[in-house]
Length: 148
Image (cartoon, rainbow, N blue to C red):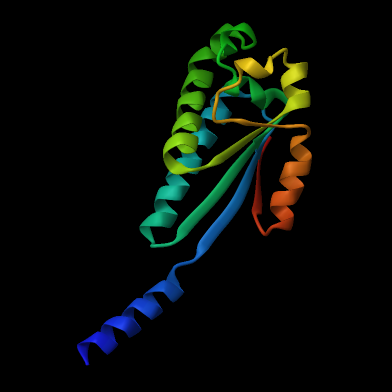
């Protein structure tokens, strides 16, 4: 009898667990803002997981937001933005490598920011056009969260 209760409890326990899917689209050139948003993504994941739900997040980067994925961002970022971009990159690296967040950077934006593909962090997927990726995520049921 206690096994029946255990099975019922496990079944209803899994019904509660949901999945939160979101794509965070970043085009901002404000280094401090980008840093705070990368931190906020991690905090949001913590809150959702604490509730027992699953998280499936992606970040698409284009425009002025792509320098943070460069191994040599010092060459393309204003000196006074360096501390914030470094911290944003630290948060992004943790999100991608430790939390499973998929990171996609736009090839056109990399080119316009003079960032070579070989200078992009290893975990970053380079897309021909990150708008296409963002649209696909939305079509697959991901909520769109923009950082402008």
